[in-house]
Length: 390
Ligand code: NAD
Ligand code: MG
Image: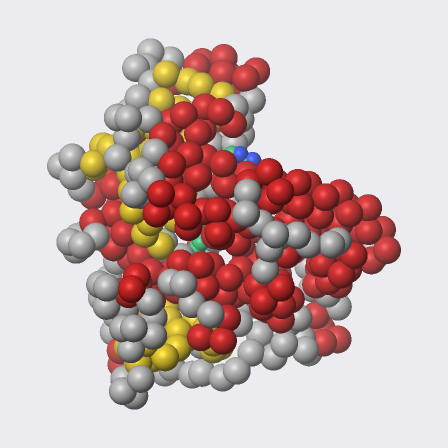
């Protein structure tokens, strides 16, 4: 029996995880569920899955959640330290890291440092602190399994011994597929006027609002590019982004002998979640099999003129140090401002570019430096929003 903590249980990944867990009560038991502020949803999940602990953000909401839960064996905790505590708890084996954004870094790292089996959806933590994070995985003998559909696909296409080094196992290149998002075919002029509602309507996936906007700007692929470099110890030159509008091939690995291996499936996050939960076994995910005859697959290169975020992410990865943390923080501020209708869509990349240009980057060997860069980038981005606002 695996006992699981789900960080970000009320989100899109959290709910998909519970859907898979619910199919296999003989294998998985929910140890803790966490949420930011959607108390009613969390209460329902607690009633259904009976975790030992529920963690929320604010102390003052504990009594509200208690009232919603009524008679219950679930203990309610609040705050950042409680998140880290349930992630590192000795009675928990597996942690699904599915908080969105930089807020996921400390609890995810707590799970890593406790040597857990960590299912990583929260790509932002790896983007911010790649070096510290991957070193902690090694030092604490944690097991890191990718949930992002592309990275899970790559993981499935790599040989078991890929950690010896990509070139040692004959890998030439990783091909990271991208749907191109809802504005794939929009002209530069049309992009000027797009709204948060349009940006959040992804053609192939149902996801949280922040990652939906990231998909629309292609920053999601930029963050995933950085994520791939850290997860698979790839050089930036070994990762290539390919637009594939149908999201049927979730990514590919090319070998030096001319072979290209791909992982295919319907676009449904329950597949990578089930893969990581059960690895190295396979379990039912509740996802129907792919009907190849129903699909025509297309591929072409990304247009970095219309979607500059991808190039910004690549530059930040090449610059190294705290540059990816700065990129991530500026992006979080820009996306929140866009969703709040304070910033036009096309200004998201402009704001990030400004922050990256103006903030000096430093080496990122420790967490304090990274968190400081994150805070500085947020403050500067916030300050510059008015330059680009409507
Ligand atoms: P979401 O917005 O649907 O859910 C986010 C979850 O995080 C919620 O449970 C929320 O309560 C919690 N949360 C938000 N802010 C918090 C804070 N400050 N402190 C504590 N908890 C907080 O997001 P999502 O779409 O499920 O994405 C979660 C993560 O998974 C993101 O990093 C995203 O990039 C990644 N991811 C998502 C998908 C997808 O299909 N949704 C695919 C690949 C990767
Ligand atoms: Mg992805």
